[in-house]
Length: 589
Image (cartoon, rainbow, N blue to C red; front, side, top):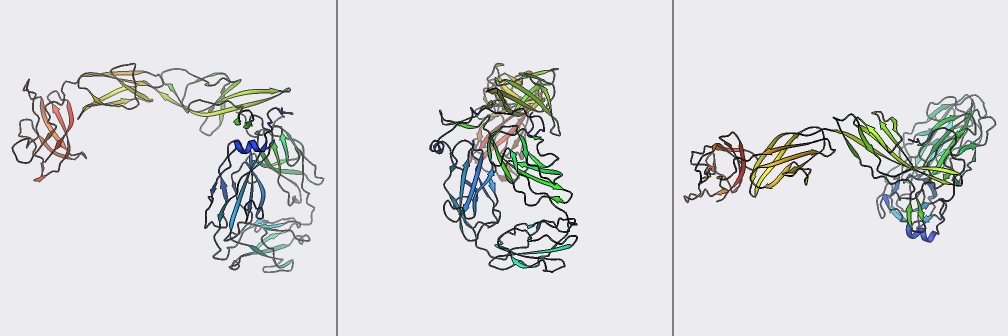
């Protein structure tokens, strides 16, 4: 299984461009739907000013740009912020109060015109109280050995519209920066370096039109001896903003003269580091990563030396080529994906009594990989052929891939599916229960065994059903068949119905008219033989009501001197052959 970021030699130095389909913007507009806002929904009101914005994911779209404004299509709050493949955005400075906010999502493509969707909007709540105090981002409270050239930054205080900043060398001191209104910003770059080897006290007080935060405590950090920080680095290959980048490029940036190393983070959105997180490199051109096709990647490169990290380094971006897709086919107007479409099932059964069980691929492809996944999530390759032998239950991964070749270059387009293997065994029938219903008998089969079983009546070839209950079955002898759905065996049992429910009345009317006032078993006329030992009567909830003997007058519909209501009642009888007969009857008044 190819991992997302293996540091390895490049496998692909140049990629074919035959996948890059140029499609007119008007055609794409008709073939591609725009996403709807999820939170806040379009037209929502009373939205808090610190809300994040999320929208639907659109199949085949490699990235999104988001703009926020106070007019349709406006960008006065946020101007086309690239969020990569992320479908959520948190405005850096929050949202203005009591305002209709217009959200414009742009679908970003690499080799065709972007699609600017119609604006959607929501309205924010007016502010009702002053903001709470904020926390510091850099330097953190009580940090030591901070470079004197450091910037100072703090986190957003929800509902704040500005911040007062004070800097001094003593608690509540302001000799470095008297209290200054920094407006709606979250950082400050001192005009000159801070004094070296000194305690620096920084106070930030958020405010809005209601008032200022109260009780905000200063943050303190200690500066290091005088030293020179390195400057920031810029991407050389690929360059910042480049598209159609090969899937395994050598990432290279300019060498910073006084840097001894570089901290590198890469993610698929500006807010993630899901590819590489704060990895250390001591060269500016030694990193090779296998990237996914059709994506925008965000990279941060921070040089460092003995004095500390470079300050103020910004994210840079590049986009990989379409590769395996998805992309739009201009001939059909549909999304095209070169990866195999898998039809492999979620669950596979194996038989416990077999030494080996062979499982086959469900697709025709250029190659296959089968992996076993252990309890810790580690994957072990167990086969690279069309079939695999599996001898134990657990979690596995099936992968099929096709090889695309063009202009001397190759690309592998894989698809994978995680599936579960369950162990099965032949069924063992432990009991068959027969109960009388108004229109026949019900047969219920009890089975022991590990497996997925299905049931048939009287015919071993079926039809089979998943339920172990058969209803409306005619009285008489029958054969029950139970088989394992994974082919591990079949069991059968003959049921002989020696005693039917004939002789048990379907209803009685205990109204004192002398007709059907009692409910009692009546032996068949042709034999006159009493085959019942005892009878128990229950209500429809299973509560015991009475026990009668076949030689008695029967049940009069009373319980503790109280006449029971009209309803269906149930009985269980025991025959002289020690068999149970169950059924129901109606009490009518």
